[in-house]
Length: 362
Image (tube, rainbow, N blue to C red):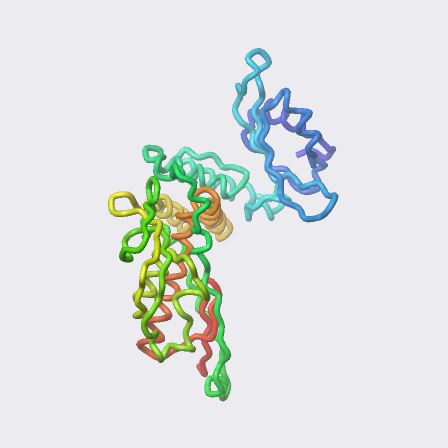
């Protein structure tokens, strides 16, 4: 710790002198590097800054983290161990909300580092980066599984096929008669369950026009839905899809079949048998175990952030995997309540991503 302001150059030299791999810089430290200061250091350091987006006109985006390697003066190449500088004021790590001089901060960092060491992973300045490294090291012999397909799948409508369930209806007079209580049932861990149970494509998807829906194939389907939706669930229960759905991921189409709708496939992008695997199963199981074994809720939440932010990264890198996880979580969420409504006549009044809301006199 230092009471005097310190510039970025001095901070990097300090880390190098003490062979430090991570520096956590707290608020009011006097270190707030701007773009020009980083550019001035690029002759001596190989730098990778991560800026936080800002929507305030004329205001410089704050620096959330900086990855630095000292450049050897003779070879002009990066020749030293990397230094990670994390600015806690803007960090997405939950433990960075603690005072830097608190025992809880360092205990949390130590416990997370020990858990990551099982897969030879170093803590990074963000949960997302840590999650990506954890997956790669956990699957060091199967790196091809997370590789992008050779075709540009970001141009395909995977993201539009992945929507969480948000729905509500106006309660009837009978439902509002008397003293009523609002109950919320939260389905925690739905995305983790989806990551463990679903299959994900390896390589390029196959495009088909027409054909049959294959419930085991991960992918997206443009379908026409028909048949009579069960009358007793309408309008007291949401349809498996949303208005004008267009493309649907495999788990949501399964819900349509479950609800008794007919499915006519117009087109599809999917991975046929032999080209999909449960890619995320072991990684997710490991992260769930680490979260379950965490000594404090703070550390448990950090492991949850590693998983959630890693899944968020898939939206950009592997939109097909992201769509499968979001759609599978939605499908399992819908299916549970659908069965309850069909068999027991208990209907919700609203749904919000992974929470159902019910009215009851109890």
